[in-house]
Length: 248
Image (cartoon, rainbow, N blue to C red; front, side, top):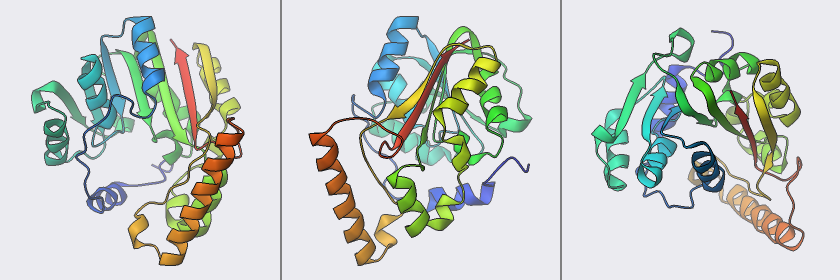
């Protein structure tokens, strides 16, 4: 499993450290415009979120688009998922859950929409993990992948103030041209890959950082927001995310 930059213990500790995971998801949740366009344009009926515990996007797609949704992850803690569902007016019957190792699982069905948000960058072999996504996409279906852009200012912040978290990411995967090439070589069409968002920075478990780090982060965040409001653009240096979209 050399391809994997994290293990089960990492994710158990990661999620156990999080508080307030059950939140009410708004209709303008991150990437909502892109997802709404895909669903409308391609008459999407079902979707699977890979590596998405506690299932924010699966819940979002069920809540606002009434899709038949599935959540697949290596680690799933049902009480957390159920609390998230309840917070959003749903029940455990509204979502299918598959707890499995993606590397030892053969898809039992394919989907109109296959998405992951913040998954592929945790693997050394970017082409391999993307191909595992593609295996879930039905002919004519859509692949939608997002990942953080740690080649931007946010990455500098992570590297300097949360090196342990930074090292859990494959920085080389954060390349829109690479992602597009992998999809095209895999036979996908209508491939779009690029930077998303004008500016943002974050730190995992920020409350545990020193007061000085938190203050510095706030100042950088505010300065970046003001700058990109005056001169709005998306770029490798500032944009916090990368989006990859393709058709099978």
